[in-house]
Length: 544
Image (tube, rainbow, N blue to C red; front, side):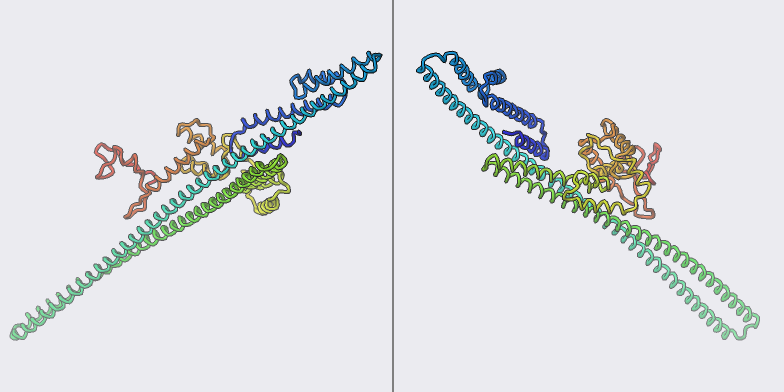
C-alpha cells in the first residue's frame, strides 16, 4: 500500500475543514498517527519481502529482532526451523537411503505447510489492509459531510447578515426621505407665511390709500359747502362793506393753500412709507428664495446619498447571493462525493479526493482574485498573476492592470501608496479593505478624526483607534479586535441616531442648529423662562 493516496486523503480533509472554518489541530494529529502507522507497515512488509526471497537464516533472525510481534513473525520462526533442519541433515548423508528419502519427504511436507501458512498470513494481511482502507474511506466521507454542513451553516449566517444590512440601509433611506419631506414642508410653510404677510401689507397700503382719498374728497366737499355758504352769505349780505368781502375772500384763499400744502405733505409721507415697505418685502422674498434654493440642494444631495446607499446594498446583496449559490454548489458536490465514496471502492474514493482537491484549488484562486478586485491596485492583480499566470481570471486581471496603468496617478497619491503600505497584523487579519474604510468613518463620526477613509491604517488612524480604546475602557494599543470592532459599530450607530434626533432648526428669523438636549438644558443654568437662572450662568450652544 503506497503513501500517495493516504497523504492526498489527509490533505483533502485538512483543506475541507479549513474552508469550513473549523480548527484542524485534532484532525491533523489523527492524520499524522495514521500516516505513521502506514509507513511502519510498508517498512515491515518490505523487510519481510527481502528476507523471504532468500534462504539466509540471518535475515529471518534480523526480522524477528526488529519485529518480534510482527505480522510475519510466526512464518519467520517456521522458516528458521526449516533451514536449521536442512543444515543438520547434511552431516548424516551416510545414513541409509530410506532415512534420506523420509527426511526429504518430511522437508517437502514442512515446506508445503510453511508455504500454505505464508499464503494464509498474506491473505489475512490483505484482508486487514482492505478493511483499513474501507474504514478510512468512510471516515473521510463523514468528514466531508461535516465540512459541507458547516459550509451550509456559514452561508446561511452570511445571507442573514446581508439581509439585516439591507434592512438597515432601507430604514436609513426612509429616515432621510422623511427628513427631506419635513424640510420641504417647512420651506413651503415659511414661503406661504411670507406670501400671506406680503398680502396683508398690500391690503393695509390699499386701505390707507382709500382713507386718504376719502379724506381728500371730504375736504373738497367741505370746501364746496363753505364756498356755497359764503356765496349765500354774500348774496344775503350784498349790502355789506367791500372790505369785509375782501377779507372773507382772503381768508378762504389762505385756507385752501394750507389744505393743499397739508395734502402734499401727507402724500409724500405715504409714498415714502410704501417704498420702504416694498423694499423690505423684496428683501424678505429674496431671503426666502435663497433658503428654498439651499433646502432644494440639500434635498438633492440626500437623494443622491440614498441612491448610492441603495446601489451599495444591492451590490452587497448580489455578492451574498453569489456566495450562497457557490456554497450550495460545493455542498451538492460534497454530497455527491460522499455518495460515490459510499457506493464505490478505493479507486473511486481516490478520484473523489482528487476532485475535492481540484475544487479547493479553484476556490483558493477565486478568493485570491476577489481580494485583488476589492483592493483595486496594480500590485494586488500582479500578485494574483504571479500565483496563477494561466488562471481562469488571468485575462481579466491583465485588463484591469492595463486600465489602472492608463489612469494618471497624482504624485501625492503615489507617494502615499508607497509610504503607507498596509501591514496586516494577526489581530486584524479578519478585516478587509472595505471593513477598514468603515471603521475609519465610524471613528470620524465619533469625533476621533482619521483625516480620511482610505482603508490604510496609518499613524493617524492608529492614534484615533487608541484614543477611542482609552475612552471606552479598552487597552489603548491601536489595533481593533473583533469584539472592539463590534463595539465601535454600535457606538457609531447610536451617535448617528442621536445626531439625527438633535437636528432641530429655529423657525423664525435665524437658521441655526440647536445645541445638545441632554446635559445643557437639564443642568443648573436653564429655566423655563429663558436662558438664565437667578444664580447666574448662561447656556452654551456649541457651534452657535
